[in-house]
Image (cartoon, rainbow, N blue to C red):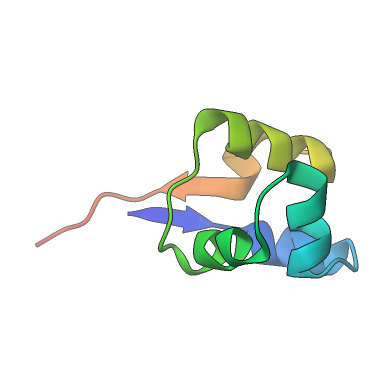
Length: 68
């Protein structure tokens, strides 16, 4: 399971989803899907988002194994 911390970083940067989407070249809905864990980003998109916030990909995305 992929956990994202994009929303927290976005709010700390006083940015809305549309602002972030514009900066990384995707639709606002894509950012919403990323924040809700519906969509897994490409490595390029993850890198671009990390660059916007001046952080690492590891700070934005966390992988947790699902336990049955």
